[in-house]
Image (cartoon, rainbow, N blue to C red):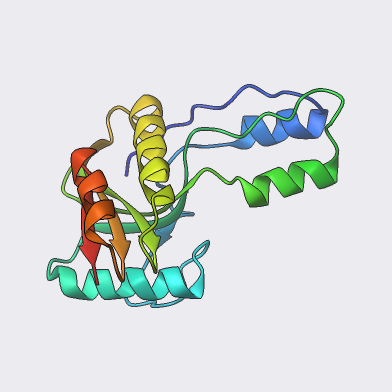
Length: 170
């Protein structure tokens, strides 16, 4: 299983430096999930879990691996003078930089963003995750970016398609 141990440089307090040093990119035993454990995938809301579950059922092909809440892109730096344990926790929880789900088929990965309703924010998230994934783990080949949702209007679908992102309506 590919894992990259690139760390982001620490900024701010000693606690922030320790957090940054402990950051490990990508799919790992910590993020790997069993396909039969529906609605138990760490990091996903109940709604996102339901969307992902429907997608995997409709996919018709069993991936070699499923990972959820996969860290990418390092930690957001907190400027000096603003660091505190409460600010660090808030940044970690509000801006986690984590892929909703990633599936592996052979040597190829798909990055999935799960949204009950399609919104353009999913496009920005997928493109950012793709950039960080490729930067931090070039050996982890991403072959597809997929928005998984319950609805998507034509205009949004066209924007996703223009960016090379597949939309899976479940």
